[in-house]
View (cartoon, rainbow, N blue to C red):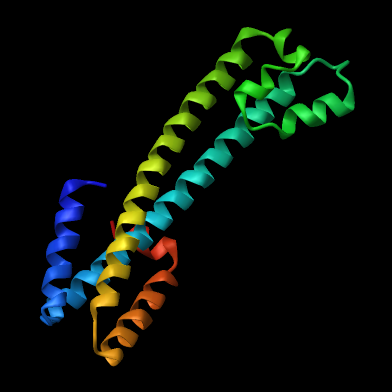
Length: 166
């Protein structure tokens, strides 16, 4: 975990443990919840982009397939969204360079998006841990309940609304 995040959690936890539950502490929890929801939306966007990218690549692959390919092999090839698996098909090995280049490019872009998602997932775990820790330190049940309700509302905001505010 990032040292700054650990320091932030420690200092926040120490303040909360001393009974100093202020509006700024509550605001910080809400900010973490908003940041976590934004990450949800970013990951959703990456997943959709990857899916669209593979859809386009598979449409091009379908056009490039030989006419005499067996229907089950064609169907199986077009279901694959993984360049490594595509390369295992004998028909793929016999195909022209441009479609192979397209598959290679899609694979590289997909790897980059997967790396981005892993980073986002870690950030989101950090926010969730911070929220959970901060909520556990709140002694006043009504304050905790109000914050949990606000967090639920944040989690129900449509991604289109969240991402348009950037």
